[in-house]
Length: 215
Image (cartoon, rainbow, N blue to C red; front, side, top):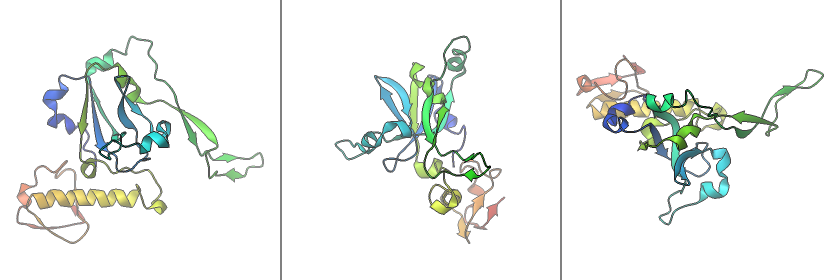
């Protein structure tokens, strides 16, 4: 759902004053497979879901909201000045340990697909430069408008291909209804050449539109 770069049009005046702009959305439940934007000793960072731990992931404020609720959806915008500051330094991104299920062959050629983690993967993330920013800005967006991750096989029924299609169709329908269109049939998707993030749909006001793809 994420309209890449569109955030710059919303906060252009703000971005000219910051070195990093991070788009985030509120997490629905503890334990979601999304990193959390937070402060560590007063410096911005993202804590990976695999490193947060269940106790902190489930911790809530006095108002009942998740304490670590600012979900990082991997939409970061950096100023060129900030990026260029790393060109002539010895800075290296740290490694993060991730336990993974790694398929492998036995000596006799049998393919083994483990059901539990059996290996370690070392990962590096661009967000580990956040704490070096002097001007860090967070922009919160509506989850249903900009975040529908594809993480799982279809058999799980969650964060899979069918849920992504469902959320995209719902968003496109929302745009058309806001423009005054009358929709017949299901589903209806809007070609990106017609509208990138809901703009330019005024010509469909009071018109009957149908899918599957509006071109």
